[in-house]
Length: 162
Image 1 (spheres, helix red, strand yellow):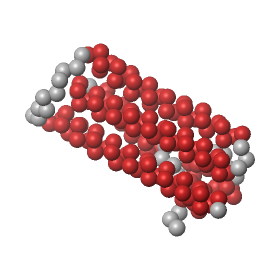
Image 2 (image 1 turned 90 degrees about the vertical axis):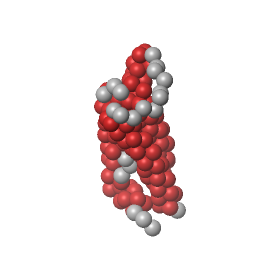
Image 3 (image 1 turned 60 degrees about the vertical axis):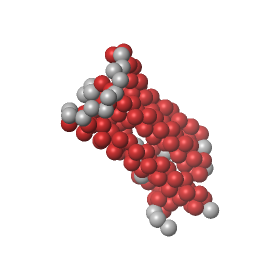
Image 4 (image 1 turned 45 degrees about the vertical axis):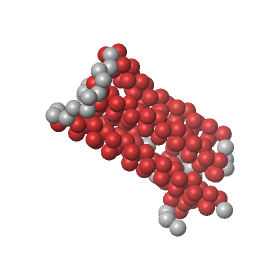
């Protein structure tokens, strides 16, 4: 029973991560190509320069906040012995993390679209690094939650297709 519930949590988490990446990547890719082509004009309004700073600051802050918030929430798992409870806390923290990363990718996309500032390309690249390094895998879950061998094997079995 526990295996099935963990499998369901893992599967939903993996789907969410892939969906958010599938939205973020093509969106930024289109804006990046638009920005580099230089011959397309969408008639976008000119925003004040301070918005550029606000977007850059907000994107950078979100990138840092998601990291620290995630690891702070993971510390809650050390108070529990039950694997299912640990996995639920991990899944909740991971969902929050990826939503923050998604918002950060949208900020980078909007910043590049409206301002053409190369910093937003760097911000998006940093977001992609976190998207790929934070993607849930059985090994990563086992390492972050400091699971015993039996628990790691259970996570590994739950991650495999039925």
